[in-house]
Length: 258
Image (cartoon, rainbow, N blue to C red):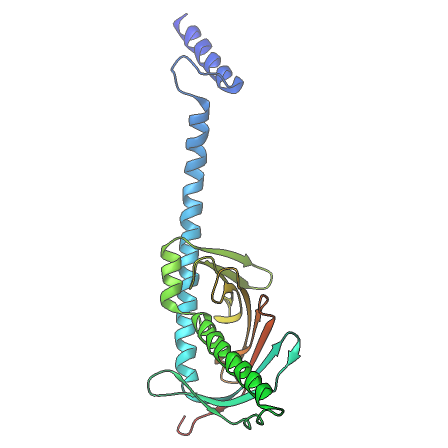
């Protein structure tokens, strides 16, 4: 008789759970469901965090190795500025890393001709050229925050929980998205080939002097014959100022002794 009552009580509690009511014991089915979901979610989150750290570590290693290799090369940098759709004369410079680890550039382009016209027109043209020169300096500084990707900034973003992964198994390329990477509100999406351990592209949404001055940056990477990964081209589009700056790196040559 007692066993029958116990069985009936269990069946009643199960029926109560299914119906969504609270059984006599006082525990709620939602708590049970939440606990079950949590038990399932924790391993997944831990695995995702492990994958993220692994990918960030692989990117940092790839950047470090390629930067070391690039110190043994010299290359040609061509910069093209378009202002309000009007392409300005391209400038070129021979580049290589100096002893201080910074890129040294030797201009090889012919200096622009002096402005023509009256004194007032010459002054206006000269001031405009200086303004463009200053802006190009700001552009170079902004580019330097994202290219090449900075290992310390990547690690800081990962430690702050501001990194996510978008894997594409069919291509073998994973997009690693960094938020607030170099400036508040920016976003850098880095495409990384896990098989070759190389960066294939970087896309950035950021700003120049003011958050309203939105700037987009597209970076394409390529490989040299010895598999060294390098920035082939960057395109910076400052919509508010109607300025597009395209920088192309080419003609890589190994330095003497390397």
